[in-house]
Image (cartoon, rainbow, N blue to C red; front, side, top):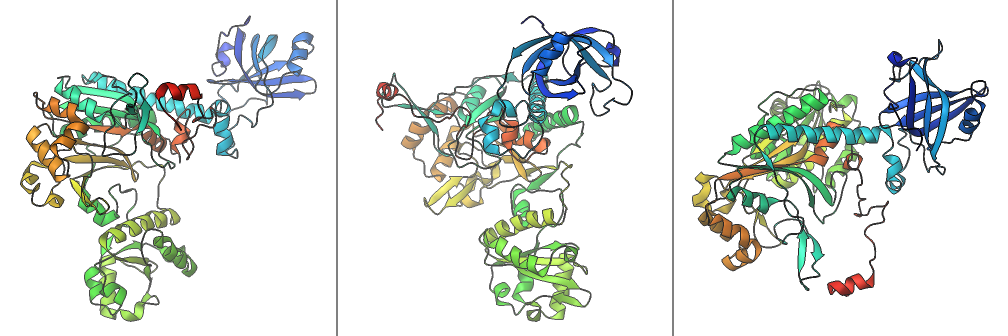
Length: 582
């Protein structure tokens, strides 16, 4: 390489006029205007226009004529002010251009399968197949740069607060109580397997027993589960753990991290402390433990009013709740209501009941089953005004919450209530410790089996596990859980009792969690922590719809890398060495 750059393609301004410079980069476009060649030269930092005039240098002009998109070139020339009327106010380098004096071709390019522009018409399959081209786009590079800045801000925040970054193993023991593990066979120990970690949970607790007190890690985690827009088989989280703390200490540290990120990366300050909402309240008002609080339309319970009606669906239902689509009659037609009825069936509801609020009362096929007095009671409870549409689901509390919660989000989007420029954080606290599994006929941990129950609920562990609440907390942003954590169990006797409530016997516990249990017997301090999902957080902060746009090399919904063609068949010799026969 003869011409090594002195400046980047996004650096030159009017102050550089008259300077001799060297630029390296990719050809974005090549244009021939009356024999004068214009090349837009691009690198990670920006774009600069370079001009080749045959009257100035015939050889350089002739070489520039052969250039095509994505050729890699080096240019030496002088910075000039653009002629009057040709300035580009939309480009940071738009006041200047470089007169091409010398030119070096560093590499050619075949015709790329798509243009390196911000045009989103390219299919995701093609983008992932040619990810190295997709990553040349300004938008994708901006996403990765923002991700870098977010992670650096988090690291700097924790470093200032005496946290230690410690790496934990990728090759570890398979443990239950989570998604499927990715297994790695051991060649040196035939018939045995490592597991890739779903999280560093056990190791970070061990670090607290080791006396490190304040640990963090930007860590890769692995889960073999069905994928969707905000889920990948390998993902990154900010993991932290602290000793001698309570819930408020960990929540305060987390809030400080998020406040720093919002201020320093997005220039959008948030007010602290972040709002707390009780788990039960979240379920009753929003139907979910990850509520989107950017808009209202919370649930109202009319189970009692339903019992007083002549409408059997309400009269016989264990739970009736509804939402008020304010001024919904301006947007939602009768045909739309029929479509919404089908929509809630996707979430287990048998149907959707609704009232259009007219000045004279309720309008609906079921209005005749409700007296004028009962309509008034329901209207008052729902805050109804003419033009509103009241929508109800009647079923078990679980079905009502699931169906109505999804309907709330769907209708809010339809009515334009979702402010995509707003960031609404909340903590959800006071989770149940256990949930009953009909499939396994036993209690399961709502978070994980090392989460501490609330101390006042310990007497209920043996008699009423369903009434035991956890010292757990989730952080939610715009209806998406971005992190969760808990105070852990540090007392061996309490841990045994929790295992018993989960149906895990002493021998089973020793096989599955032996090294952690041994550590808890040797002076474990009170401790707790949290993990923040970085991929989801970055996606939300940048206003994107998929975490694939904030990960350099993501997988498809079938957990495949289209670029490298992983997973792939391996040489039979490798399988033989591992003692594996397909």
